[in-house]
Length: 330
Image (cartoon, rainbow, N blue to C red; front, side, top):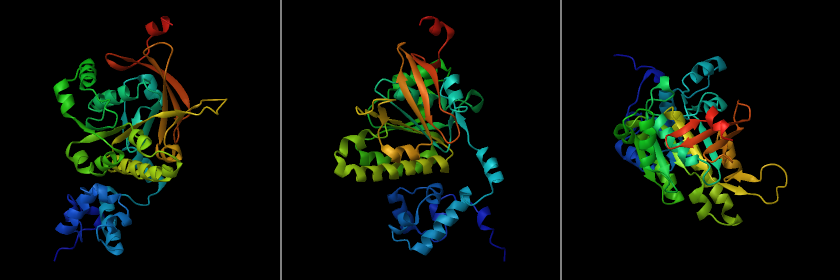
């Protein structure tokens, strides 16, 4: 009799292929939002127990699923090799890419926050186009998933940006999967059921624009703050799990609030408090310049990059570098 292949060498295409997962359990898992082996690999035991899987069996299922994407204890020299799988996506501006260490990283969350008109959604549109570029042009050769909470997505801008980069607009729009979220619960539901769509459509960029809009409007008052933060925390952890499982870049935009009691320094702060701050790996503050279409990007926090500022501009063609001609107009 042939020997069973080692656990780490066996591949599982569907959740039913995992040992101990029958059709009925698979259906319950899908109702919870676990459609792929990759999503099960980052599931918690409590989440699986909620569909009737015992603790021992839940541990076995997650362990087997994790063997597929090699989530385990490793030496740091092996981690360095794994980090080579992290890819970078261009913003469209060389100076902003430089600020971000070469562009937006996959497997992490990048947060752009700022006041209305600071360029957050414009940048998201640009990234939806850029991600479809080949790697040699700063893209990831994949599609994007765009969760829109403020009805800011405009196909016209996608077409303009695609034409500027020499891409076929008809092909570009086919590679953008769009969903409008009507409430915070709907927003959460969309991400919880996104794994299969991401896998089937070769998604390499996940955008939530904006992250906090619905949460801010629905959870009013200090008595609802704890519940809001708990749901935001779960939502963001779902996002990072998807980004890691599919080696995708995750981007969220965030609203800001003013603190009138701050007399020194910046009185503008992003919504979401410590929950959003700790889960976003890279935070960039966008603000308008006195020079019309020019914007200023400030890297506020990063695991390894220094703080700094760069300027870029938003034109009819999209996100671009500020030129010497722009400087001469000051």
